[in-house]
Amino acid sequence: MIVKIKEIFGEVSKEMKKVSWPTKQQLKESTLVVLGTCATITFFVWIVDLIMAFVIKRLIF
Image (cartoon, rainbow, N blue to C red; front, top):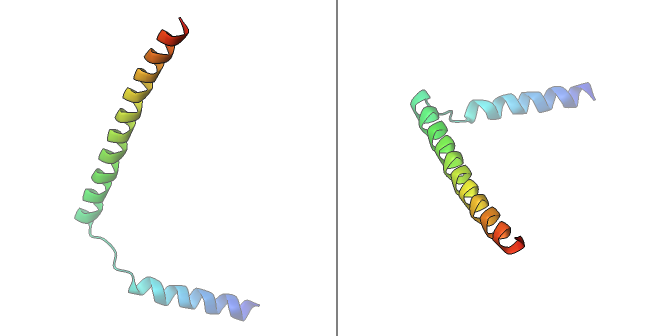
């Protein structure tokens, strides 16, 4: 059992060395894209919520 676990960690270590990690600049750009996308979707959902709340209030009252 211990041998299998050591083997798995050894394989994981080898595979992690093959990974191409992003540069700082790429990471910053990707982070900005994600934050911008989240902000855009949040704004869109907020607007739809306001419109739906207005419509529902008009239908009920």
